[in-house]
Every structure is written in structure tokens, then in C-alpha cells.
Image (cartoon, rainbow, N blue to C red; front, top):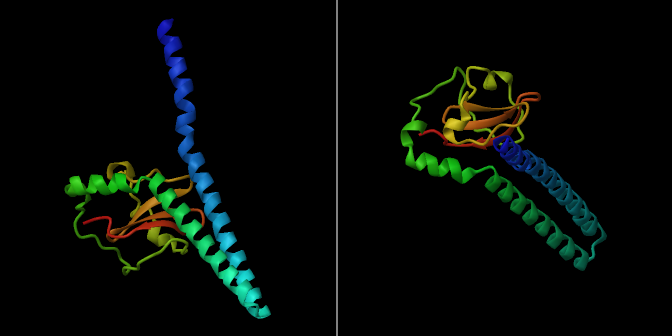
Length: 173
């Protein structure tokens, strides 16, 4: 009986901690969207200030745009830290053979993709999916997302719409 109660208590304590990464990820995505929206609003205000011609307004709006961009960069860096970029980088430097996957070619040419670009389904077909991302210490893909190999790069793809969520160039040796 004592073991059952102890196991139940441990499960109750561990459950909220396990739900945290997805909640943190959703929160950081909301923050990034809000920051991008703030940047657009500040740029609009700057454009309006330039039309009015008041120097002080233009200076103030430029500063606001700079601050909004800085906040966006900081939130992006925080999200990347939470995604565990250093985990796979450290692991890769110690275990080079895991990342030495040889010369890999696809029937299409190499394109350096960036986040936010929509790509054709042929780029993220089942042939290119990384079946075991945990082996490379990649963060867990979210719902409707997949890690895909594109030559020596790794892409996180939103499979519903075909958007590149994240790129890691030069992932493989």
C-alpha cells in the first residue's frame, strides 16, 4: 500500500512538470507573434511620423522600432535556449560518428530554406523524415510537425501547410 501511495504522489508531482515544455512553447510562440505585431505597429507609426514631418516624433518612433526589434530578438533567443540548441551541439561535438551520415543526395537540387517559407510536399515526404530525432538530441516536434533532412540541413516542417518552422543548417558533417 505504501508503494502505491508513493507512486501516486510521484506521478502527481511529475505530471505538471511534463506539461510545461508544450505550454512554454505555446507561450513563447504567442510572445513572438505579439512582438512581430508590435514591430509592424511601430513601423506604421514611424511611417506616419515621417509623413507629418516632426523630427522629434520620427526619432521617438525609430527608437520604438529598435526596441520592439530588440525585444523580438531576445524572445527568439529565449525560445531557442528552451528548445535545447546547446544539447545537440554539445552532443554532436562529442559524438561525431552519429552525425556523419555520409553523402546524401535527393532527386532535387539543394535550396537553403529559411523559417516561414512554404515548400512542396516532395521535400518532406516519408523518405526524408528523421524517424529518430531523439537520437540526434533534436527537440521533440510538435503536433503536425516533422524533422526532415535536406542534404546536410535539418528542417522542422509544419506538415499541414508545408511551412518551414525551423532550420538547422549544416547539421550533419
